[in-house]
Image (cartoon, rainbow, N blue to C red; front, side):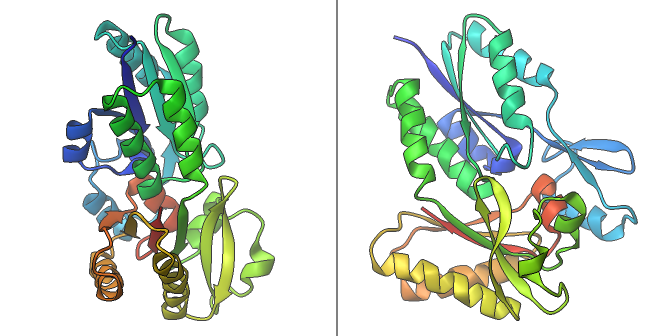
Length: 280
């Protein structure tokens, strides 16, 4: 029988304990401030990133991993006896990381890379990676793991509200949906991922109304018994994330709710203060 490893990238924002317990490997993406490259969570913590974001005059940019990082890791995994790798990455519509992983897989003989485009990022991507790792530990064949992840992708819901749309507009990650958004100063659009792109889902006048709209959708699914896990995701806004978690727990105390975060790479595009809720 073959031996399957699970690989993801740093934008899944999985904590070290989870990575170690499930044996998940990860490749870092980077942010660039004034020409200097920082691998997220290695050279620059999330807390340090948001502090730097508030003081630097020029907004940062992001960078995908070099193909050599993938080929080197795949070679190491092959030498450790792995025959297959299930590689789960952020949406191909917002980064070339997934394609780089596939290219690396073709360059290293003796190990087969099975790519999964999460079509999203952050906690939902992390959920897919965790699920893949659990299945791998149970001895599930890699092809079956990929099939299961593709099924789960269709069940993921994720919505978020950004404090300032400037970051998304500047980075070109918002698509050409300005007509729906209207006045950037007056409307707080609820955003989500559609076919791997960040697009507006609905437009409301205030952040409070936007969050309540998202919670209404979540509570409908919770009432129907369709939710396994909820993630509240924040960009340097843990206090408000905790408030959201408590609000959800008040009405659905038995629901598994975790607090996650938008790290440096995704935070570059969303900006400080953003909030999101995802569920599966």
